[in-house]
Picture 1: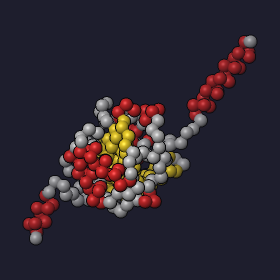
Picture 2: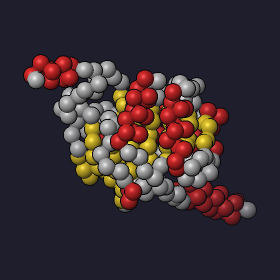
Picture 3: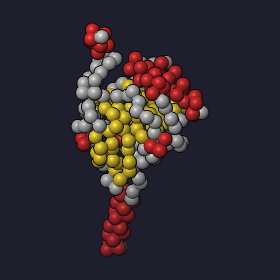
Length: 227
């Protein structure tokens, strides 16, 4: 039994909770020091990351710096995004709109579409919005993502969050006044941690408008003085 266990532990796909990821050294920094310090420097370059939380609270902003570290010709696949993709919004998170393809399908087919896209080796980053994913489905995506060098990010509603999944990084995000609160549920090579504050600006603000109004007011005062 001891020798059999030893053989299992030596398998490259087996890792202990306190071990660093095997066969992958590069991390994609989020640019938020408080988060990067905890998740071993950033997101895994390849593999599956799950982010659970309410839709529209800044989940893509969390990936903004990650996207800058992919190649200029990186192909992005959005599977079942929750709304219409706007060109300017994509550029704000450092995604070239021309390199984005969208697949809209049923919940039942979305996981199949994602897996087939990964296996095609045509996309560098795949973003999948789904209502539910089980361990077997996540494992299939994880194996395919590593084999075909693809970063897969699964967005799942927090109120429908599945049980623990065999993925390298599992996060829950919550909107707070300072931006986002990130809770690490699972981290390959690290430990869970809660209440990490990430200063993401995820709602529109009037900064630009106020700046223009002040500039206009100053010009108006100058014109009045020299009129």
